[in-house]
Image (cartoon, rainbow, N blue to C red):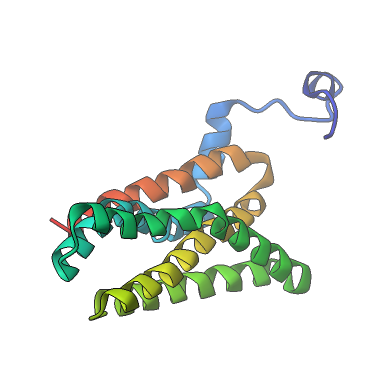
Length: 182
């Protein structure tokens, strides 16, 4: 959008920054690591649910493997729109309250996700568990979308490095939560 990067760098409008320097700047920013943890708590949970939900429905509700897998797949289907909704609500909150609105949106999504996973884990009926899982999934995916509504503002010149670190938080969270199921 700003023009040809080679020309901008040649004329001194855009500074020459190495990938290592960009990564270092992103990695030493405390806010990057806060988002890393937050993303571990949404995308990490999603990956864990994708791995564990079918077995949960099979063991807890006596479903066949095929039926449990079909029910569990609903969690993933929410990705079709819920991540986008998270980003959309983050943008709306930003328009009204600035960055504070984005942060409140993220906080609300993560808090609802946490409450719903506890309710889901304690549900006693198959129908209730499915409905709760749908809402749980919506908040998980929305938290993911709202995370990337914040990332570009952490340190704009180093957004790529910060995105990579935050994204790695999701995989790290999946490993951590996955170990909890051992």
